[in-house]
Image 1 (spheres, rainbow, N blue to C red):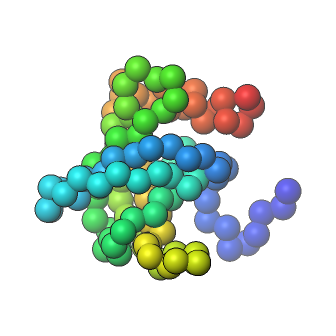
Image 2 (cartoon, rainbow, N blue to C red):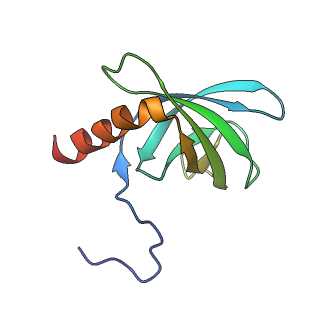
Length: 117
């Protein structure tokens, strides 16, 4: 598959609906969401409100069959109104800044299972 000249992604984006919990540190509000896609460098999910570009979120990813959630920090790369029938939320693109060392192998194994499983 040829990549477009404008394609900026380094990693394959995989459709995967994972439960996540995210915290906006400035407000300490906790939200739950489901990913729309995920890659080694980030993820996309729908949020109930627009998130400002550049803010850092604390994220917990719930991986199927994993004993513990994956803990990560991610930067909001973009936030756009959803293109759905109800148009009630915002799609948010997150770029991972850090994934806890304890969780990296579990996360990478999950991605490999999606690709090769």
